[in-house]
Length: 144
Length: 147
Image 1 (spheres, rainbow over the protein chains, first blue to last red):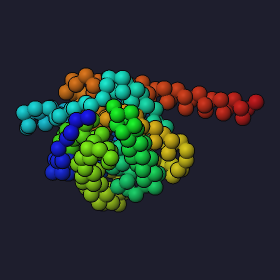
Image 2: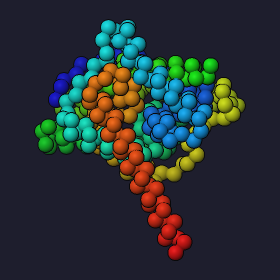
Image 3: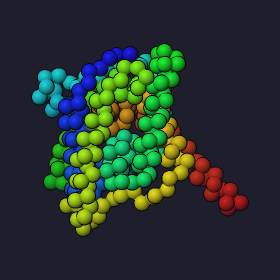
C-alpha cells in the first residue's frame, strides 16, 4: 500500500477538464466520450472517416501528459502498489468487463450519468461495487 | 479542420486525466479502500466532471445536430440486464486488481511507464476475448434456432 495525499483542487480541475472534453465532443461531433467505445471502434472501424476521428482523439489524449510535463516539469505521478501479475490479470478482466458492460468510467460514469441514463447509473453502481469488493478482499482479507 | 478540433478535445481529456490523479493506481485504489487508508480525492474528479457535463449536454442536446455530422450518436438500448450488470461488476473487479481504468491508462501511454503498457496491452486482449465469446454465443444461438 502507498499512502496518497488528499488533493481536492487538482481532482476537481482534472474532472472539470474531463467534463469539458466530453461536452465539446458531443457538441462538435455528437459522440459520447467513452474510452472503451472509442478504442474498440478504432481497432475495428466501420469506415475510414470513423477511424480518422478516433485516431485524432486518441492522439490528443496521449498528448495530454506531454502538456502536463511542459507545465509542471514532470509527468503525472503513477504509483503502482500491485504486482505485474495483478496488472496483467486485472487488465484482461477489465477488457472483458467493459466489453460486456458496454462502457467504463468515462462512458458510463461521466457521460451516461450526465445524461441521466438509467443504464449508466446501474453500470456505475455495479463497477463501483466490484472495485470496492476487490480492494477489500485484496487488502483486508489477503493483506496484499 | 474537424480532426484538429477533435485532437484538441482529446488533449483536454488527457490533460484532465493527468491532473486529476485518475491515472495513479495508488490514488484510485485508496479511494475505494474505505476500511483502510481512504483518500476521498476521486469523488471530486467524477463530481466536477458531471457538474460540467450534465448542464453542457443539456444545452448541446437541445440543438438540432452537432457542428460536424448529421446527428447525435447516443446508445439506443435502454436494456438493464445481466450482461450490463455482470460486465460492469467484472470491470470493477479488474479495476480493483490493477488500479487503472481504460480512460485513465490510454492518455498516460505517452509516459512510457511499463505498468501502463502492460495494463493497456492486457485490457486490449480482454476486449478481443470478450468480442470472440460474444460472437460465438450469438452463432450458437443462431444455430440453435435454425436447427
